[in-house]
Structure formats: structure tokens, C-alpha cells
Length: 246
Image 1 (tube, helix red, strand yellow):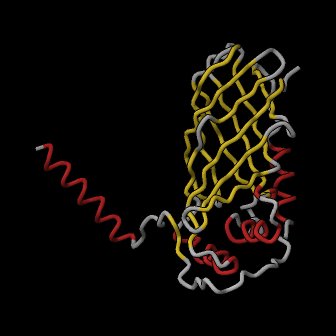
Image 2 (cartoon, rainbow, N blue to C red; image 1 turned 90 degrees about the horizontal axis):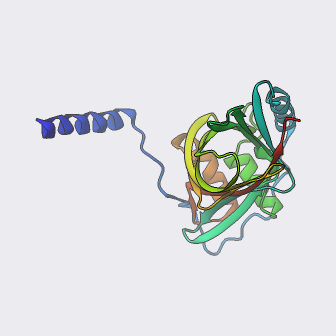
């Protein structure tokens, strides 16, 4: 009976995939126009950040932490970094960072648990290669589209302690280009009275590519003349927080 039930569920899942006409993106997206003799386009127009500036300012105003019956730890920038790594041509890492992001850890007065919210200003992407960065912002991150230049997220930290050093799990729910993503990242936390550090001890993998974004991704591939680009990125960070409630 159990085998029959599993078979029915499996058939139902396959039917859904067949009727949707969509499948998950490949791990490495291929540029079928790749020419090993071609020279990549070296210039890329500056990205229009009109929406990004407006939306980041609006987010900061809306997400100011409240200290009513809560404890708040605010991230310190500089002093923190958010690193992202992808792969080109299947085995060549491309690493960059986001220079503007926010994150507030919030607990109740008893500090029984901890969580909070944050956001990433996608227009702050920086891999120290301006033409490539403009392409990533334009074709991958979509910062020129209204309503897509900020990636908000919520999170929880388990376990949470009042002092000391401990290992924990950071669970993140993030919205990127209007698509929801979940990640679990192992972290190491050290807390004193006036400072808290939270550093990743592993990476969180985010599959950013979707069937709807393939045409834009291929524009980047062709302009850079990459043969392959990973459909995922790996995320790691080092974060310093200070008390947000006096």
C-alpha cells in the first residue's frame, strides 16, 4: 500500500512538471554562441541607478529598528563584508561583494530567541571590474527595473545566547528579483556587552537563475564571451554588530 502511495505521488509530481513546461535551470548555463577566438566586449554603459537610489532610501526609512520591549543589534559598515562567488566556464571562480546592506538582529527582553530583517542594495555589487559589474547589475541583478533593486530578507538564528562564543545556524528568507529563496548558513557568533560578531563557517547556495531570466543571462554570456556561467552563487560573510538601543 505504501509503495502504491509513493508511486501515485511520484506520477503526480511528474505530471505537474510536464504540464508546466518548465524545468530547473542547468547547474552551468551554456553560451552556445561561444567562440574561443572572439574578443569579449570591453566596455559596458553605466547602469541607471535612479530606481536603486530611491528604493534603498525608502527601505532604510521603513526598516528603522524599534526598541520598544526589544533588544536590537545593528550591523556596522565598514567592519562587515558580504561575499558572493560564482563560477565561469565551470571551474573559474568569480568573486565579488555587496558594499551596501543592512541587517538588524532583534530579540525580546528575555532573549529567548533572535531574528530580524535586512536588505541588500543590489546596485552596490563590486568585483573590482567595472564593465563586468555593470553587466551583472544590468542583466543578472536587474537594478534598472523598478521594484527590483533591493533584495529584502528576514532571518532567524538558532540557538541564541546572552554571552560567549557559540556555533549556530542562520536561516534566511530572501527575495531577489521578485522570487523567494531560502538558505541555511552555519555561523560562529561571539558576543560581549558592546559588540557581537557573526561570521559564516560555510556558504549558503542561492540559485539565482530561472527560466524567465535566461535571455538576460545569455546577453551577459555573449558580451563577456564566457562559455558557461553557473546558475548559482555561494554566499559567505563576516559581520560586526553594535547595540542599537541605548
